[in-house]
Length: 117
Image (cartoon, rainbow, N blue to C red; front, side):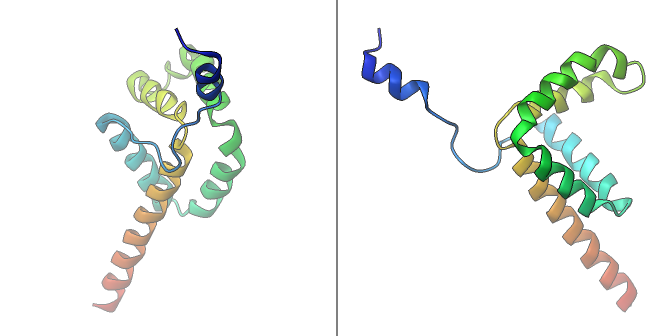
């Protein structure tokens, strides 16, 4: 049994700062989504959307779970579940934002090297 002080300390514990650590399927899904965003040149709007939704990422994941029966009629149910589960974690938005930046930097470097040759 926890003492009152231990309970109080544990009650306000938060996850460590920094990006969340996705599972391998979640990592592959996030990378696929980020590559598609970069390919469509929608990186800036995606960053804006991520930053605006950062305080509500857990709530957004719950809304995704609610709409899962409808959306999975058109989308891959496993991928949708992986994404909504990943978004429940603190730091998931940070991870997606970092991956988006890294993939965009790689695409930009590849485009520059392609134009230089």
